Each structure stands twice: as C-alpha cells, then as structure tokens.
Amino acid sequence: MGRAGILRRRAGSVAFRENEAMLNLFLAFLKVGAASYGGGWTIVGIIRTEILSLGWLTPDDFARLVAVAQVTPGPVALNAATMVGFRLFGLAGAAIATLAVVAVPVTLALTVGALMSRMAKRGRQVTEALKTGTIGLIAMTVWAFAPAATSSWLNAVTAIVAFSVSAFTRINPLWVILGSGIIGAARRAIFG
Image 1 (cartoon, rainbow, N blue to C red):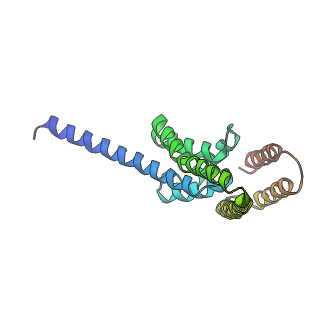
Image 2: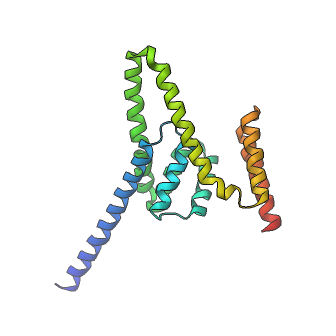
Image 3: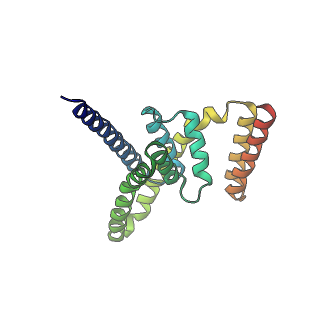
C-alpha cells in the first residue's frame, strides 16, 4: 500500500473515531433526556454524571459551563447540553446534543398529553408521581454540586443564604443568582 493509501486509511480511521464520538454524544444526551422529566435543575446532575464519567470535561469546566448556561436565556439543562456539544464538536455537536436531550421528553410529553386527555380523572395522580421523581432528581443535583459549594466557609454560607432566600421569600431567583455571583467575584478578587 502506497503513502496515499495509508493517508486515506488514517483519515478514514479519524473520521470513524469522530463519528463514533458524536454517536456517543448523541446516546449520552438521549439517556440524559430519557431520565430528565421535569427539566431544569433535575437534569443538570444527570448531565454532570454522564459527562464526567466519559471524561469529556473536568468538574471545574462543567461547573463554569453550567454557570454560563444559567445566565443564557432558555432552560438551563438545554443550554448546558448545547454548550457541552458545542465545546466538544462545534456546531454539529451542539445540534446533536440539543436534539438528543429533547427527543425523549418531547415524545413523552406528547404521549402523556394524549393519554391524560383520555384519563382526566387520573391526571392528578400522574402529576403527583412526577413531582416526587422531580424532587429526587433535584436532590441529586444538589448533592453533586455540594462539594464545590462548600469548598470554603464563604461558599457554604453563600449557598445556604441563597437557598434560604430562594426557598422562603418571593425574591426573584435572578437577584439571588446575581448576588451570589457578586459575592463569588468579590471573594475571588480579594482572596484569589
């Protein structure tokens, strides 16, 4: 086999590995979407587990990505999936991750909507069951981010105060996030 044949074979092998990696990205976010009824923060913990287990991002990179996803307009989980896909494979990766993460929930929502219209009496029971599952997924996300939130006494106090303000007042969560960000930036500027 000549040099040109070897180069074509290597190029084909690289393209295969990239296609395989994109398929893995699709399957990872399809799995995330399948386990994510409730959206929002319920899915972030699942995304974190999946992405870190594949070694695609470090925990710090993922935390920064989620912070950016949160301030970007739209659902945080969808933004996080899109950003992970973009970071790994550019525009094609963003499209693949976005489509994969919404495929199962959209299909389920359409199916459940059709079924609930037939079973109006049991709709409340289904909703209550879904709420219970959502609480568990949110708890998983809190557990996953707890080490970063409690890495210093100031982070721990900020996290507790932010949770308390969000849970027990009617203050817009955007102000809580903004205040927490200012405290974090000030801490980093002062203490490094």
